[in-house]
Image 1 (cartoon, rainbow, N blue to C red):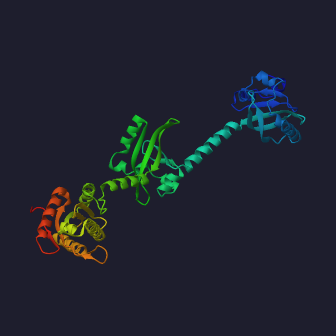
Image 2: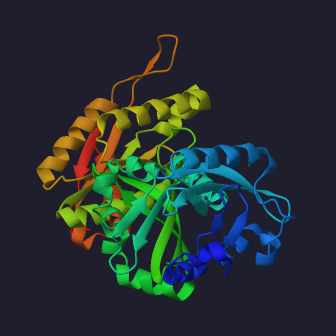
Image 3: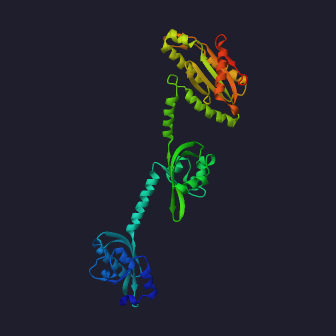
Amino acid sequence: MDKPIARLDESISRLFDVTPIPTAITCPKGRLLYTNPALCQFLGYSRNELMSNDVMMTHPDDLALNQRIRSQLSREPFTPIQIEKRYRHKKGYTLVAQLNIAADVNEVGRVHHFVSQIVDMSAMRKSHAAELLLNHMVKKGSDAIYVAEMEYGHILNCNELAYKRLGYSKEELLQLSVIDINPRFCEETTWSEHVSRMRLNGEACIEATHRRKDGKEIPIEASVNMVDFDGQQYLIAIVRDISERKEQQLKAIEAQNLDPLTNLANRRLLESQLKQLAGECRKKGEKIAFMYVDIDNFKSLNDQHGHVVGDKILTEFAKRLQDFTRQSDLVGRLGGDEFLIVLPGLNSREHVLSIAHHILQVTSHPIDIGESELIPINVSLGATLCDSQELNCVRAVSVADKAMYVAKTREGSACYFLDIDSD
């Protein structure tokens, strides 16, 4: 060890040798007296190379700064300096570092040497830049991002879009679990089953819904990955709102399943809607009324006035049905001049007939086909009432159809109720 270093306590010397922070001791004029292995690694030189006079470890543009630092420490030896400066790696590139330097004063008050420790700022800045870039991309991304723990699904972190989309503050959302915002884990599968599949596959693409703070559900698509970090396993989900996609899909389906003339549901769409309506009525314990509606002598009207007028009659008739019925009711065109109305929540024969008479009043007014010409029409309506717990839709429509033919035997617009069990 060099003689100037011999003054150091042996334990401090050993500490410098093993510390991971680059450390150096220089004389007041700047000559290097000691380097630890960390400084050699930082600059890419061996200790012998650094101790030679051939190596300039300070960046040339900061040599004047070195002189100012030594002068200041000589004037104020009991005030350490912390400053940012540049160094030159053996391979030629620049390293930005924080220099922490203090003076060691001898017995007579003179500066004996300087002790320096150098903190690499290049790696830190790159790390901060990477973190800044990542945070910006995550925060401003077009998808919601969640981090959840594996055991209970607690949400540990999320980006701005995640909590704003669901109507929460970030603090509120981080008090919840995935189970709280995703109904599928209560209805279709359990969280433990989901975790088991994730442990097996490592990733999954899930289409589900997320429940907002206000209770509204939005359709989502989640790309979920299991990640190991510091010995712990986490789930990271990138979640996209697919409401617009679902709406477009629904429009495409409706375009295929709506009657092109009246824009009412056709048979295919009615069947699908009936299944959903029946399920809802079973949960509520409601009965369902079926009404089969027909325009009397429509073929004669069509033949007499032509297909253009016939189409006007059908579209106006369909509009009247839609205007009268509730949003919860189903209205569809079965073909020709035959229509089906399905009404939940009508729990008695009297109630059904009361609604049927109102429908006849609304739909039986003469239809304006243009040029002040009104065409009178008569309507026949057959109705039945079904228990949703034992619903057979095909039979219900058939019974309502038979009831409609009974109504046709009566003069003018008429309705007839046929009990579902009497057929």
